[in-house]
Amino acid sequence: MDFTPEQVERYSRHILLQDVGVEGQEKIHNGKVLVIGAGGLGAPALLYLAAAGVGTIGVIDGDVVDLSNLQRQVIHFTPDVGKPKVLSAKEKIRQINPDVNVVAYHELFTAQNAFDLIRDYDFIVDGTDNFPVKFLINDACVMTGKAFSHGGILRFDGQTMTHLPGTACYRCVFHSPPPPNAVPTCSQAGVLGAIAGMLGTIQATETLKFLTGAGSLLTDKLLSFNAKTMHFRTVKLHKNPRCPVCGEHPVITELIEGEQAFCEIKNRKA
Image (cartoon, rainbow, N blue to C red; front, side, top):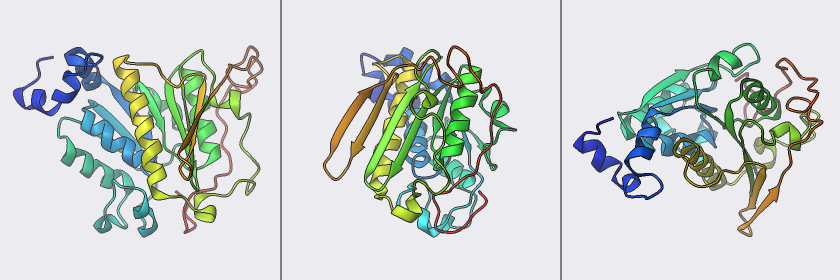
């Protein structure tokens, strides 16, 4: 594509990078990314993907902005309280970068709509806050051959991994969701707001690396960190031949709904 002078100036720091350049910025511009969840992880990921010039960004979230969200969900502002998160996020994305086409889905990500939602996107960012939906995202992406970034935060800790077809998936590492109430949500245990920014920007970085082909992704690796000590650790993973969804003899052949424990102080349905 022919970038306008304004676009060349906007993306000049990318274009200067040897591993990105004009060709890489074109790939970013042509990229289609779906961010599932416009909360703690989705907020910083959306901001950086928009700033980078990703051509089409889809964002799905069934919730509205709550005052307790503002401690970490930096795409939402105080006047947005009560507004659907996807509309709040869309407004900020367009302010950051009018080049971006934003597709907002004010609904939940479910077994019924998962395949339709991810079909047209190149890369999926898991910014959700409950285990059953994380497994649902994993299973839908594995079944359709989609690449995605997993992320999770609690207290002072964060973890992330990236899946490409043929690499270890989320179920290879964590076989199934924990029993309800076995693991506290961040509304029960708390979370340092900046942790969401740390992990969400890592997920955005993985997305941009995927689109441009620069560097190596967190495939077959689990990156975890503790912000109190600033200790980062990368654990090597292996594709599990007995994985119930991507193994040699998969037993999960259709999407499964599950009980959801949301990271909110108030009891919400979304």
